[in-house]
Image (cartoon, rainbow over all chains, first blue to last red; front, side):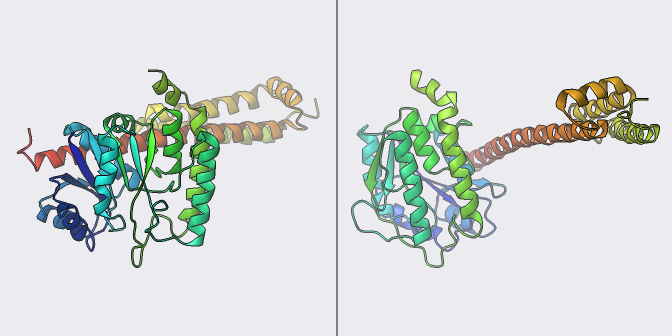
Length: 238
Length: 121
């Protein structure tokens, strides 16, 4: 297996260096690519200086587009497995092997890092947790599977999934709980793996300002669209 | 004269507005400020409006069918529906352009990344 670690990063000059160091310190000889989502700071420079391959989007396109770029990159460069973690240091690189193992053993198509199983983790704020519970419940209602951490961006994917995500089926503006619902309906196997996540000091997360309102709306719409779309069923039939 | 018919005053005004829109779009297309493929809904709107104003019997028929009180309401409703259609048409176009832009941007980033790493392949 040829795994690739991908790190989507937008203005993460402060943290990207240490994330890359910690990945290198695993000493697994993992290939790493940083997807620089149009940062205006030195993110790309720092990553290149660390000897990392950088794919630089010319302007900020959002987390989902950066991730999909990573999937397309992995496919073109002949990798057959991707581990993704955030560039803000929120995800513990030490848990990469645990995620990879699930994919390498063929136990699942998606290894979903969960901060809520295994116990050693932080708890996000009340509003965020409410959203997680709500969408976790919705995902459960639609798929019959309980996910403990539907908003986790710390994941590993196999090649089948990369190919599935490299198309327009991938909801590139806010990929989240709706992706899990879509994958389940398309017959992909998902396994949750305990991982460590840290609270980023002074975090300006994806879910701040007015965005939570749009997020909730978009997620509701996206999740309810999933059962209505034929393409997912078509994938299952082939 | 049917009391429901539009007065000549109203007719002249409505035809004038429709004509102005129609000619404006034609002129924009001529100057290549609007592409042909994005002009057809506007031209159709203008043409249908003129037709309805000139052909009063048709306007009256539609008014009765939809249960409106006055033909002017029907005309207003028609123009509103056309505007709605145009707005939705644009949403579809913008969505398509957004997808194309996304794919193009990704393609650019991937190619540029490969160019700056010639050792691969």
